[in-house]
Length: 350
Image (tube, rainbow, N blue to C red):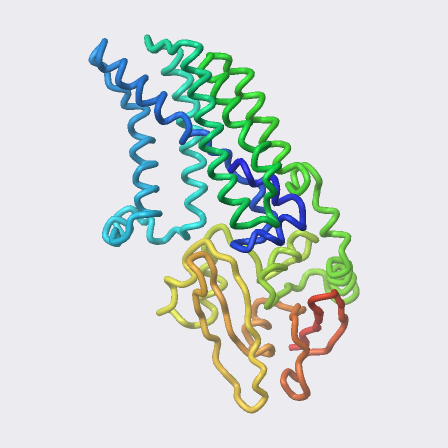
């Protein structure tokens, strides 16, 4: 969105109480809502003069309508099951809308170039001013609700790019419009997007150095498992094998070794994999599989479960230290202290 660039600033991001996740700065610039009226006029003009229906545009628009209805209209459970949208976390619907936004932008340029609809320059200016007013209303609302996230100064500044893009699109100066969109997109993510700044800020962190040092000291081929989801991909990022992390496709061979075939629907999917280690020394449990979220898969088990031996797990990363007799197979190798969280690295001896 037009405000996502503010997520690059840590102070602003912390004030965004809905989700202070700075990776959200890398988001889609949804110009499509501001082009809906011009698109409708292009479609109507083509139908009125040539009896031609722009099916190539109507299809993505209908898909966008479906996505929007699923997001905001209650009672569409059957529709969600038929379209499989019920399996998509609502916050991830932005991906579908963003792709449709790009498709419709390309189709808009193509259809507008061949359309007989020719708005006057005055009409284009007025419409662009209406876009400014619309974005101002949105931004002022955000500034009032989240003053630490957005000031009124930024509310005004960030209301201009979409209006300029709309203006130059309607003026058929597509290169200028696209250039503004690209620059605006770049400035909104350049301070947090790994493609631009790299991952050294993470790989050079104390926890990363401790993980790499531990792995090299003992056995670099053994896997890691952790109970802190925010560090789920740290082993892979540092070139270490890991059982925790983001699995972009199902790993049936791995999870079938837990011998729970009735839970296959839980792990037969894309998911963030995380572990919870049992800490009750008086009772030994069998692995428990749960889905805390639509895109998450959690395994609760004993830290010395033989599953870890089967999967050659040699290291556990946890945010809570194990007590006496809670895990006799573990030996503490590293403690990494941060202001808000302390991490413990254990060696698994099975």
